[in-house]
Length: 61
Image (cartoon, rainbow, N blue to C red; front, side, top):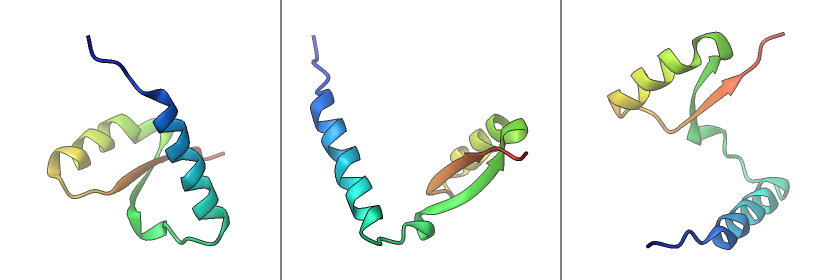
């Protein structure tokens, strides 16, 4: 049975937060933004096309 090493995932999150707080501009990695209402339909289409980086779900209020 494979063991999931969650400590490594947490360490990655902490390093990512530290890099963002120190001024890293990650905006170029975020290629698509979709509203909640359309997210799943749009997300799977973009992912299937292999033309995406980080896809963001955002709320519009």
